[in-house]
Image (cartoon, rainbow, N blue to C red; front, side, top):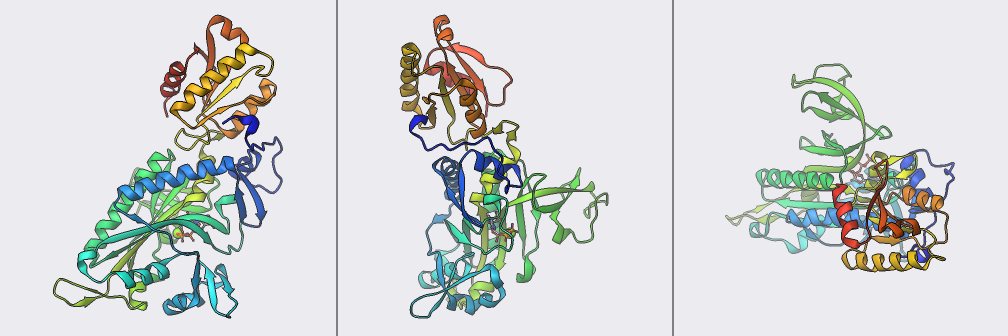
Length: 422
Ligand SMILES: Nc1ncnc2c1ncn2[C@@H]1O[C@H](COP(=O)(O)OP(=O)(O)OP(=O)(O)O)[C@@H](O)[C@H]1O
Ligand SMILES: [Mg+2]
């Protein structure tokens, strides 16, 4: 991407209404723009990151044997009345009425829709177990939208739902999904913790949350230092910091997290209330049991920033960076030698990766570097006349203290990027 032609809107000023660093930096870098409370446009720069998160999630869901589909965002009221949630969801659910005076909602989640879909197409134990998922826009009329995309009203979620003949099969899939989530958060390169969560009013079944650890996290977690116990505060109940862990291993410490994923053994609440049955091997009708598995795709973008930033801006891991590398030519306009070298390197590197930016804007070096650091591009190459005379260009990793001289060719740049790790 030639930055002279790219819609990049960076700013030095910290927006007054942004409380936490990820929100501030996303606005300053021009990744998002606010339309109204809890409603954001993903600008081209931000969308590049969001799409990378989305693709990692998609790859790991597919690898775990799940099948992607896409359900409508708007859902008829009857389904929610059947499960009793038309009333219990309260004002978080955005209700709509069409021209025929029929009631709908903008889906805050999709258990009712997926269960109805399943009912139409699945008949036999031979078709189970199955896990279906989508990556789709949800709407929840949050009482207090804040922190930008972290607690928005409209947001992108990956929601998966599994169907089973018995509890043992549900337990198997639950473990497969749990492992897939671990792969996802390992690939995202964030520090996270899995905690026991409250299974709410659904009864006795298992539920765990995945939290990115951050001081600014809205959730309090009780975790055992020197042990494996970890629970959110609802489950931990009266447990206090300094108490011994309930399993006797370690001492309880309170930490903060951002909930980015939630996996759940649902049981038969939805299949029962929506009257679903499948035939078992003996030809008897049974009610299938279900699991559900959510990931806050758009929230992850903010959560990662909360762990990866410094005074200058964001610091993306390679896997999520909007651009992996920026080429910074000094005096691109006036120096033919610099321009030719920059154009050649850019063309060669573009053959190998689409994630390359060429900063061909007529900017002073300081302003150019400040943008690269704010946006958090992990690798930077500076091309200047003096270096070219010595046969060198300058490579610097976003996290390194100093730049190093390397040879003027694409292979040296790629080597330098690989050696920087990540
Ligand atoms: N308002 C929101 N903005 C962005 N992401 C959200 C929002 N609400 C939920 N998510 C994400 O969707 C995932 C699955 O939804 P789930 O129903 O478990 O959310 P939740 O428990 O209501 O979240 P929270 O407790 O943070 O409100 C959550 O783990 C979270 O990452
Ligand atoms: Mg949750």
